[in-house]
View 1 (tube, rainbow, N blue to C red):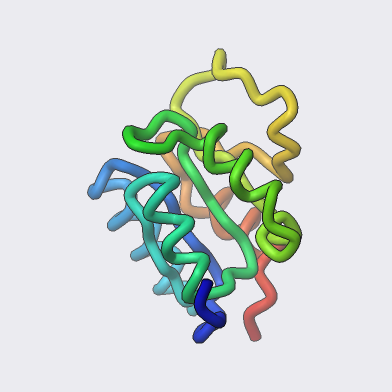
View 2: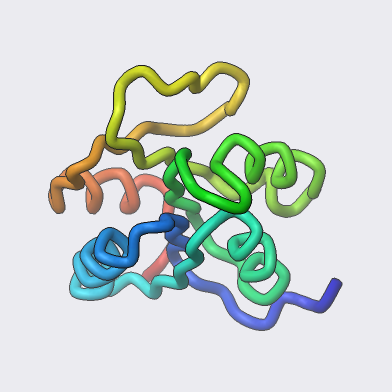
Length: 124
């Protein structure tokens, strides 16, 4: 594993490009630095290079879904310290044992997104 090169405010993990673009735009305009990943495996590769203050992730993704990512996150002493917010479009997804900080419902409302991120991100 390589050393962490960059600190960012938010790691956004979602397989839908339009969601990544919209959420990134909202956060960037509010002054946050955002790094994106398209699935859990991509997020793990990103975490080898950057250290976000908060992770916002979808649960239903191809390759490695949100629950599988959380399992990998729990096995890493540094990654498990990062607050994780689930962003989901459904209300029936099992969130048991994910130990998430909060849930953000899709479609994402900008004010709610910014409220949640401001609680967890340590940007200045």
